[in-house]
Length: 140
Ligand code: SF4
Image (cartoon, rainbow, N blue to C red):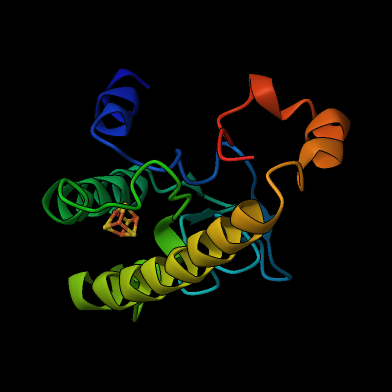
């Protein structure tokens, strides 16, 4: 477990299979319902810890490289799934996902600014409902 946490500290999303686990009709394990190409074990042999660790290391290495200059980093909730190609983490697939993430945040921020310029109190009700002042969503 210590090894997993040291890789996790490098900027990973989570430990695949720990937070949630999907088990299919054959007894195969997957990190979630979207990761059907990422088999991480099965009911007969248990977890494939090497596969889990490789997945985390590959993801952390790519994120170390591409996230350091990214303006979205404080909002980004990306996980392994968006960077998967043929059952492995793929740098180009991850970069394509990042472009989509950045475009959507660009639209979000433009809309947010437009709304706030017209009415700075626009989100006050939402702020009360969600008690957002205590969370990381500081924009509202
Ligand atoms: S969008 Fe991509 S590069 Fe930017 S923080 Fe998220 S994972 Fe990193």
